[in-house]
Length: 634
Image (cartoon, rainbow, N blue to C red):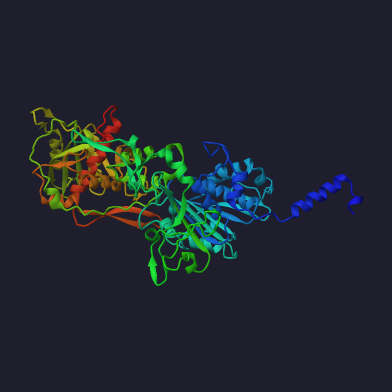
C-alpha cells in the first residue's frame, strides 16, 4: 500500500505511527533531567535544570504509582516549588492526568500560575505543544492538555474543592490553609475526595511548619515513613542527619559580653567529633541517602530505625523502590513489608542542606545569632531556616520571683535618655506609671500611682497634669521632665479623655489597644500613630498581644541584659501580681486559622497594661525622632 503513497504521505503516516507507539516508562526525575528548564521569572539562575542530589528521590517519588501521599516538611530555599513545577510538566507531557494545585488563597494561586506555570509552558516546548489553546481551555488558572487539565486554586473556599476529579492533588504552604474549610472539613480530606476515582491517585503536600501541636504539615508528616537526609562524615564516613544543634558556633566572653564568631561555624560529626567545613557539603550530599526514621512493629517488637541503624539500600540500583526502608533487626525484612496498602513518604529538609548562596552554614549561624533574644525572630528562624515547628514556652511568671529582683533607687538613672508616663483609665480612678528609658531599651520603673475619682470630674485631670509637670531628678541631681504621656482612651470615659488630650496635646497622646488577635508571623509594628476618622485626633494604636509577648520575655531577662525591666522598692506584691496576671493561649478563629491571644488569670491587670503601653510608647518615640535609637543592639 505504501507504494501508492507519495513521499509526503508516507512521511505523514510514519509520523502518525511513531506517535502511536507506546513510550518507554520514564519518571518525573528522568523527565526533569532531560527537559527541565529554570525560567527567569522565578529563578536567580536560569537555564537547564540540574537537580541537587537531595532533590532526586523526592522528585522521582512524585511519579511513583505505589506512593499515595508525599509530605515535604521543609524550610524555605530548598526548591520544593520547582519540583512541583516539573511534576506538573511531567504529567502534561508524559503521563497525562488532571492535576489540582492548591495554594493558601486565590491570590497565591494566581501568582503561581503567572510566575511558575506560564513560564514553564513557554520555556519547555515538550510541555507547551501539549496545551490546548482555546479560549475556554487556556485561562490563567486552568490549562487543558491532551488527557486532562491543570488547575490552580485557592484553598480557603470549599467551592474550590467541589466538582473536580483529579488523579493528583498538590498543596503548597499547607500550614497556611484553614483547619476547617467553610465547616466542610480539613483541606486534606477534601483533597482526597477529588482522587477517589483513581487507583493511583496521589496527594503531595509541601510546607514550612509553624506552631508545635498546631501544624497540619507536621501531623501529616507523622503519618509517613518520616525520611531524613543522612550524609557521610568526610572524616569517618559515619552516616548522620545534619542537625542544627551540631552546628558549632565559637563564642567567648569579653568584658562580660558574649561574642559569637559566626564566620567559623562548622558542623561537628556525632561519631568522630571532627569539625566539618561547608565546602564538603556537596560531596557529602552526593553520597547521601534518604532513610526512614519512623518506628515500626516487627517480630513482636516496636523498633526505632535511628537506634537499629539498619536500612535496605541497593548500591547497584539507586532507583530501587525499597531503598531507604528500615530493616527489622531480627528477620531483616523491611518495615514496609509489615504494612498493607500504598506507601506514604515523608521528607524533612532544611536550609543546612540547601545550595542557595544565602544558605551557607555561616549564613545560618548569622540568622540564629540575630534571632537570639526575640521570640518572634526565633520563631521565624525555626520555621523558615530549620523547617521545624516552634514550640511556645509557656512559662508561668511567679510574682514572688520577680520581687526578688527589686532594687533600691528612687531617682532617674544618669544613663536614662527619656522619661515617659502611661495612664490607664477606670471609672473611678486613673492609674499611671513613670518609666525612664536607657540604651538597649532598658527600663527603670520610677513610680506607679493612682489618682482617685471619677474622670468626669475636672480635679482628676488637674491632678494628672500636675503629675506630668512635676520635675524628677537623676542620681547626680539633674532635673528632668516627663517627655510625653500616653493615656488609654478605650472603654472608660472616652469623651473626657479626648477633651483633656485635645487641650493638652503637646504633653499627652491618646492610645488604644488593637483588639485583633495576633496571627503567625504578624508584621505589624508594636505601635503606630493613626488619625481618628471622627475628628482627626492622633491616636497611638498598640498591637497589645505582640507587645505582651515582648514584656513577658523581658521579665525573664537578667539584670545586666539589655531590655531588662527594673523595679524599685516602691512597687509592692499587688503590682507584681497584676504584672503576671495573664497567660497566652492559642485558638482557632472562625475561618479555622490559629491565632494567639492573652486571657486574664485574675481580675486586675493594670500593671501589665501600663508596662505594655510603655514599650509601645518608647517604640513610637524612636520612630518619630530622627536619630533617637535605644533599640537592643544585635
